[in-house]
Image (cartoon, rainbow, N blue to C red; front, side):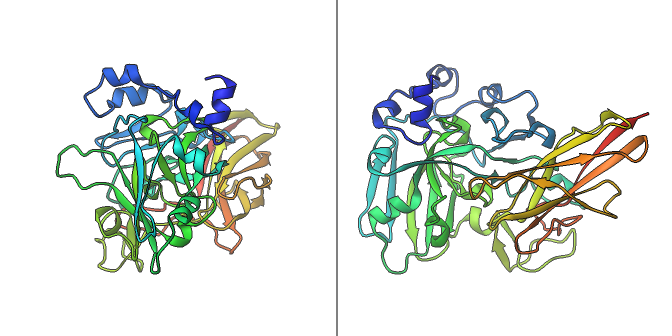
Length: 397
């Protein structure tokens, strides 16, 4: 993709350039009508991607494959609830309805003509990221301890600008996004999630058409998706076709039985309680991206430890590193903050005190005084794992 096309699609697009995005035609001819085969999706990802399930398709890379300031498309995690649709951008329209003064409908081409385009970097993370770390095992896809997240750049328009254009009626409280992904059977429930109006009106919540200055890949929502940064990935509806303004949270399986946590802690291994909370913002979290597990260095030399830290709402205050199983902690250097919902890079110079095996631990703190726990609170669906990340390495004599 040439520089002019990258710049235009990545958030300052005009309809003339968007109209040239006839991507994926060859792949579409090789797959069943209306959906994209998993093999085609996997071909566009790095070989380091570890695939966790086929139906639905899920995959991610481990922490040491995340040593990038901006997550490349090929390393962005994959999490489908249903199948991956092949959408014709020329025919696709986004409809806004519900508690609005005017129902609106837009083509992908019309959005950048009528609203200001923006580009920002922001975290997206599956609610089940790190699920394999819970003991006893929790229900759901066994995501890696450090898999299921990414922080690319997104291009699109602000959701709030589109809502303002429609006009909100009294009582408007939630905005529900519905995707166009088909189920494996005709009776499969559509993927619909709603977000509170305050989050919908956040200037960082987008209707996006670009990821890293390129059109959204098919598996990541082409041609349009919501980006609700800092919150569980299911809130960021892919293949977005309808936005409905409601007077209360949407009631459906992706709001009431999936993506919920117990209102109060439960004993590990117990079933979900009747009182639940919708999964929304991620707690503070960090991962070590370098060194990779079992890396080797020479004793007497210094090793620069790098990683990324983030929090769903608020800001990261500091990151600490321990090399003695959490007995003592040393403060890492934290890079200046970028966009509000982007992760932050940290670094720490490690000097082993003796040859042999050493374990490095990382924990982050947010501005409200919340710290990553050694082990996250257990919940039946295995959401919000943010326990200390540990990496073992060797110092050779």
